[in-house]
Length: 135
Image (cartoon, rainbow, N blue to C red; front, side, top):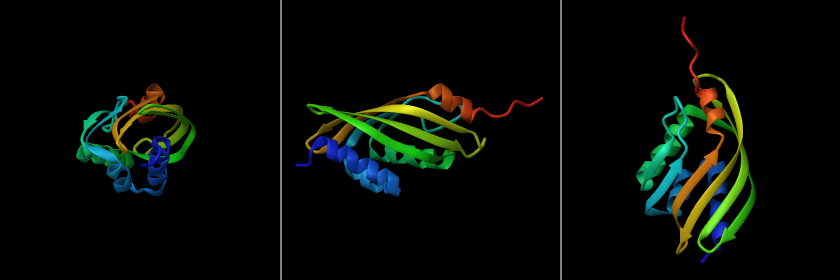
């Protein structure tokens, strides 16, 4: 069985290649996936199962263009892997760019991801998604 950190690194490689099916294949059927809410974005919140996680990736891709995705450090203990990194994206609707550090917390059991939770500066993301005020 692959090392839990390697499973997560493989997911990040899949993300960089646009291979969402590769990420989903590393998740259990009932994976629990949580992203902070972002005002005016539709991809935040909690998702249950591969189909809903697939929808998350589709919505994220439709709403923002990833400019930078850099995993920097991995910390593993038992069935937990914590990854630290940097992210930058351009919101397609507003043209605004936001940058943030992130923390990803994975639970991996029997070689499959059972849960994912992300922490990042969602206030910065919400500002980038803010629609222009109308007079």
